[in-house]
Length: 170
Image (cartoon, rainbow, N blue to C red; front, side, top):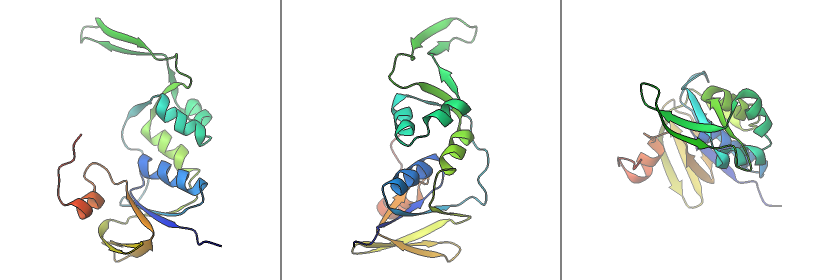
């Protein structure tokens, strides 16, 4: 029997959590490393359009998101004095558009992740040797896997380690 492949994810935010959840459900062994000491409420509300709600539906989490968020029927833009500029109906998709707080979405995702989730670990460097990748944290912690995913944000240290200090295109 083949040994389960191990994936290391640097970054435990929404991107890291949903990736870990999807990988767990397909049989991968996943370890997540997050630099913050605790997962707490961060950010503001976001809109999850049909492509995102499709992913939540596939993961069995759409009902939780609907319960914790707000169904959005229109996307409206107004001037400062209230004059309507644009009003687009968004309730005609197969799946809903949901407004939800980032922290609520993160909580929903993390509640289902079965991966090892290690807080307070800041990525320092990586080494690759054939089909293995080793990651080293500033604390001295070390881990080894078959693949590494950088989900550590816009100023990704994983991307910088792989490609140098290149300003990302946004």
